[in-house]
Image (cartoon, rainbow, N blue to C red; front, side, top):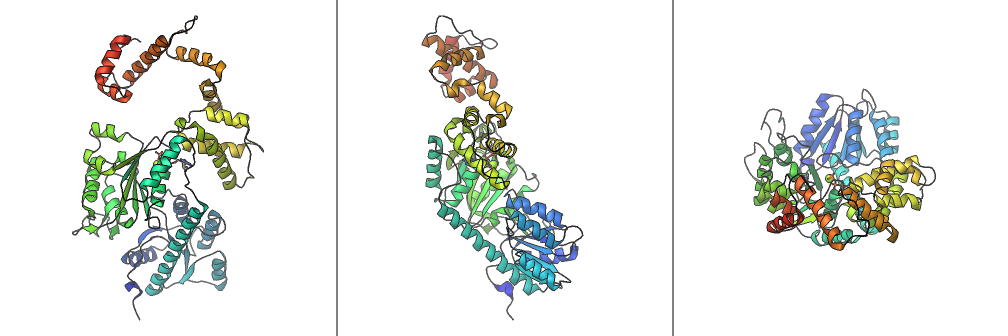
Length: 495
Ligand SMILES: Nc1ncnc2c1ncn2[C@@H]1O[C@H](COP(=O)(O)OP(=O)(O)OP(=O)(O)O)[C@@H](O)[C@H]1O
Ligand SMILES: [Mg+2]
């Protein structure tokens, strides 16, 4: 009989093994890792469920789980109950293939498992070949399904990035241009602006779309683990390295790796990433030969990476390798025109996810939302919409808009400024910068000077009165700023 392990495709995939018996977990890990799979394990269904929930929400480090191998008989929740919960999670069918394992399977168990959409059923004692073949089929199935979903999403058309404002259209255009290339892209922008969505959209627009997209949250991996997480390790490379492990760069081979929060990576790891980017080869921890990988690298950060380079916290050479194409995602306050679209979209999403009938939103509520500055950007908007959709009656009204949103919006009539409101705006502006609005009207020159004086003074204060940095942040020459300060009488201490 041919050894099923001879199939050259191996078992590249992430598999979660659930069994309360340590020996079974260990045996399965050995067999599957020996075939090239990455194995996670759990000894209770509750733990497995928590991992799978993160996997479905796409917040699991290293990418989603592609297959679950679960024992039926377990101390708490059983394997079949877990399968039931997964069906709920997947809206009727499990969101990933599930193979159940049983030592004392009854026919009724097997029938129930099949009804619930289990992909296969293994009986103990486990036969190696049966396991390898069954797992290979299940992984293939998962890959095909994923590809189908992608095709369907594409047919439905469009990017998941919502927005028709000018800055958003420009961003979509950049994605469309850079997507199909191999270029490394550095995505910058405030927290919650959609950097991760942009990274996924770039991957989706590339010819690697059907290959893996591996997300790494560089801020979440402890410094001492980052090298082995990224590049893998050989058996015995350090205490605790009981088996060989492929790193995230290897898992992304042929596809894309997304180094999220790259600004939080320490200098040691930066040096190692740089080496891989330069050579296209990596070395597992404790490994002896370099391994060639074909990986497209996207990175994102909410820090200002250039400032970090200037401050010595980020390697300049790595910065230039990563930022071949820099993309900045604009904050939501710079594209107020997108607020209504996003609100409507996330009301629909929240209603659907929570089994509520769709709800309209009143104009007054929408005006208040559009006048708000959204410091937490789209993430904040999404959360507010979810809360409002759940708590409101049949329609979302101004009563449902959180008080701080309404108040912050009211404090700035500018967004809704009609002619009559300009006076109010000016008076507010003058109060804000510590002046009385002159009763007899104001000249353009004095308006400009008062605003410039207050603005420069504030920025200098924020930057510790460092004139060079302030000049840079204001986009003017240092000498020009000096002149302005003199002209406007700006000194440390008083405006
Ligand atoms: N243009 C957009 N259209 C639709 N949804 C968006 C858009 N931008 C962001 N979102 C949603 O807002 C949330 C935050 O987006 P994302 O996680 O990509 O932000 P981020 O920039 O990576 O934030 P952080 O720096 O905090 O990691 C997600 O739920 C995402 O789906
Ligand atoms: Mg992010």
